[in-house]
Length: 113
Image (cartoon, rainbow, N blue to C red):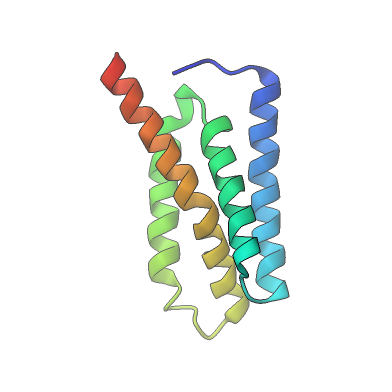
């Protein structure tokens, strides 16, 4: 994988932090509009492209997969808590594209080495 500079790494960290904060805010505000989904998806893509270095790939993929599975299946368990259900939904919108991007980058890295 390509080594990234400190500035690119910082952008990825801020995108991740912004995404999680927005997920929490949108959970309290209410429903997920198409605009909100688009914003969170773009943040997820940025996180996948910028935030995960070569050393963190395996840990990110494992954590991302667990978060996606737990969020997807956990929504039915917390359906009575609307805020928590919406928060899990928003986190899914961030982490699904991020995890897919990192997985594709990892497969490409394996294939070219």
